[in-house]
Image 1 (cartoon, rainbow, N blue to C red):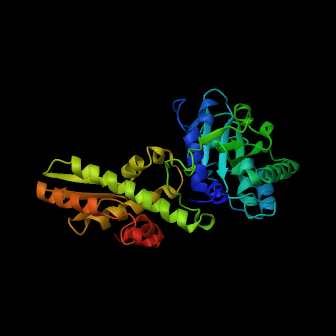
Image 2 (image 1 turned 90 degrees about the vertical axis):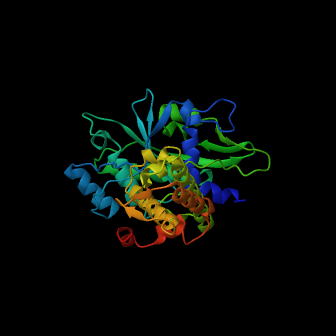
Length: 354
């Protein structure tokens, strides 16, 4: 069982806690969807937030961040509300950071860009944003102060800054709670929802307070995630992909040509959440799944690459279909020769060689 501090600081756990908090669930569920009940829903994961274009903003960001990099930010979660016009941007962090941290650059860019999200949405006029960072409850108050200081530094340079706030995850006797050290800093519906430290994931006896994950693995967080959790997440995602491959093969009617699309497999394996993924990491996800198709099936059938994540397999008769089915049923998600953990660790250039 993973200890509480490790679990709460794990960004995959944080992401899935937020996703469950946004689900439409019955009242008797072990999970309380506090964000959904407050009117919020998922807009996207990793969507680009464009930088301000004005010369003053560019000069201020370059001076304050020490970098002239104008690339967009890609926050972990972009939330929307059924009636409130303010759209919260949520960034997940294993721990808090100070104004001197390397995270300073990202935070400054996000705070400046989120003052008006309309350009990022290709909308006319203005669309107010609100920058929220989520971390462990122990680090949330310090992180809230850091964000306030960074916003003030932008305003001092005459650059409009989006409002900021922090959300903390904690393990209580009743389960995992979401809260804020300063609820008044949050968008009004969210501040009201988290004012009483609601339990999102209810405890179930001695069992680990860890729900079924929508997304068992996130690219780009290797440096902040425990290796054991990363490995377990990749094995779980491999197992789900193999299960949906097996379903596709089993439902085929030979003679036929079967298309195994990495994007569709990932959508099924993540209960549709992958459809909301807008980050450049989306390609890393799907191309890694294309490799799993190759490694799982090539020993028994010819696999033709159609694109980076799409494969084509001929099933001319029931005998070959049975052989492919048997191969998938015997596939071991823990086997490093065929699982996603090995696939994602290979140099990116190998994606084009398969």
